[in-house]
Image (cartoon, rainbow, N blue to C red; front, side, top):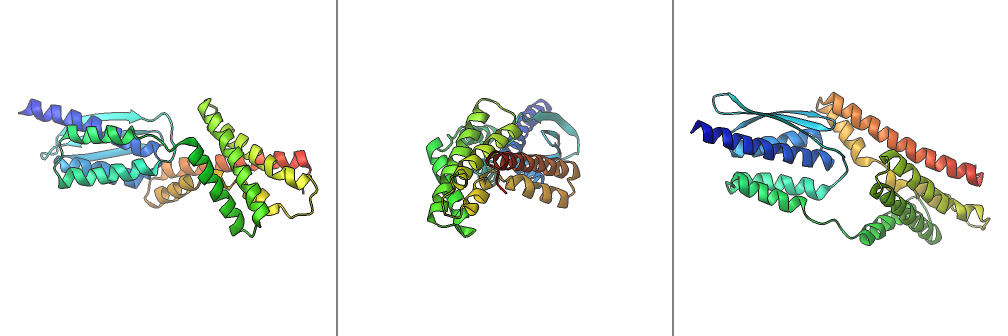
Length: 257
């Protein structure tokens, strides 16, 4: 019986580490990661003690007698934002409790969730560019400026995707995207047309703003996860600096005030 419990604990511990790393790499806050992992552990009558570092998760599982029967750690190579993964794992944790799923059933559903394909690239490019045009309109841009913001966002995001695909440094990828987007928008200003293009130029790089890392940084600090909050905040600051440098170089090239 004890051997069976140890085997189950090892399987569950391995599964929970995969869940935690999947959430961490998808942009979840530390509090959400802990709540979700503990919910899974509760479904199988274990207590989970979790330590979250900026790029890794450590886990200890304890049984009803408070005996530690699993210890493990797993790291994540990269981080991004994937709300579909975060919400899908959260729903899966509730189903594990309500439907009393087995560990293997949870693992199978998790693998299916993580294997879901991304949206087609052209769809992402189009709708993110459309959002850029909408931002331009919100800041007072006219139809021409919206079209320029759309084109600048499209080109900048395409360059960032290519840089990521070729495994460039994330900050360098954002810098290139900011530079290309601002060069595209700035070209219309430099052309000397008698139209105000400032709104298009200012909103051409908004798609690069690290909103999720900034929000997670704040929530982690509020929840007492000081190290993770500081790391995420500094990471967002570095992305912001990369965006600013891209804009600055474009302004220097075009000699814009």
